[in-house]
Structures are given as structure tokens and as C-alpha cells.
Image 1 (cartoon, rainbow, N blue to C red):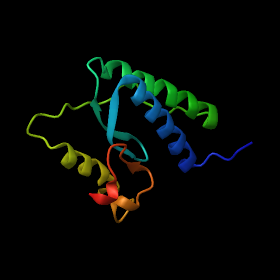
Image 2 (image 1 turned 90 degrees about the horizontal axis):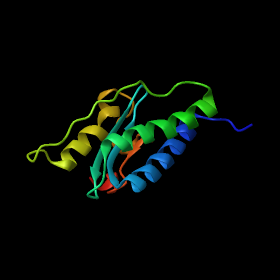
Image 3 (image 1 turned 180 degrees about the horizontal axis):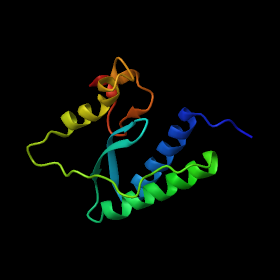
Length: 126
């Protein structure tokens, strides 16, 4: 039986999130897996991109994988969403999300934290 580490679980979760985001028409500007929660900055790329369908599918698929590998529960029932206003810069919000591990003293530099990144840009070029 394979050993499931935190890194493997994050890697598998990210694969699922990538696939689901493509299927539901979303780009992942930033992601950051923290010890108790996940931050995502997403953008709907299609006219029919639907957050209310995307999030439950993401939670369902990742929960199934997590329960199968660890036997535990992954998500709480609800989630928090914030829609960016026109005056909010996407890259600034992405950087804020990516710097969460530094603020929580999990990393000295956000580019060295292994559980965050972007599927839109290279965070090392920030």
C-alpha cells in the first residue's frame, strides 16, 4: 500500500482542481493549501462558468480522494467567497493569497512554500 504524505495529497488534490477548473471554465490565478483550509483565486473564463457548480464538484472529488486515502473528512460544509471589485487588482490579491504561509510563519518566502502556486503565471516572476 502506498504511503500518502501531505505532499502527495496536495499533489492529487491539485490535479483534481486543475481538471475540474478546465471542465467548469475557470482559471486558477492562485492557490494556497494551508493546514486547515484552501485559498483559491479563480476567474470564470466562459459565459457559462458557474461557481455554485464548480465548488461543490471540487469539494466532492477532493473529499472522495481524501477519504479514500486517509479515512478522514476534508471539508467543512460551507465556504467563503469574495467577488473582486473593479478597483481590486488580480495580481495583488494573488500575491496576498500566496503570502499567507509567510504571515503564518510556515515559510520565509512564498516562492519556497511547496503547497501554493498559480496555473496562470509563474509565481517566481512576481
